[in-house]
Amino acid sequence: MTELGYSIYFAQGGDIGSSVSTWLARLYPQAVRALHLNFISGSFQPPLTESERPLSAADTEWLAARTRWAEREGGYSHAQSTTPQTLAYALTDSPVGLAGWLLEEFFAWSDGDNELTQRFELDELLTNVSVYWFSGNVASTLRMYEENSRQPLRFDSGERIIPPLSYARFPKEIVNPPREWAERLFNVARWTEMPVGGHFAALEQPRALAIDIHDAFSSL
Image (cartoon, rainbow, N blue to C red; front, side, top):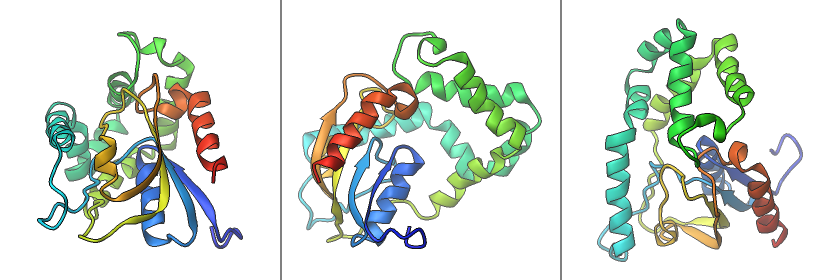
């Protein structure tokens, strides 16, 4: 951003982008004017020492829900974090295997009924799979999980993310912490309960997400 000529800027992200934006705010709080996130990483862990305030009922419920989700739905993440190269050989060898690996998450993590094409256009889905297939680049997206697992978003006692946070909470997001969990570390300035949408908010609900980003940043 500095090389592009920007000394102060906003940061926004979902999925991996939420971690990138959070790291920017953590490392360069003087440059990041504010954050807007529509996802908080599952590895996000505020300090929980005896000097911190006790866990609330909502915090406890959230931690249990996160554990249940990881046990039920987190197999992809465990595989990509531990044996990414083995999986990469399989997915670069079979377009059907690649499509199955990717589209299962589009189905499971999105808001809607039991038909995948009720949530996304078929061409959108095929385009997404094609980007991975024709570039032959799926290995790097898998290895990112292994590399990120070495440095998760864990924070020490007394740490804070200084730039104000605006959060768009989509109801079918895969892991959806309560506001008080985020407030343990973030300076939460705005918290929007979005009416519909899931993990792929920018694809599922682009207009609603764009409006919330605009409203959050324009107020600052």
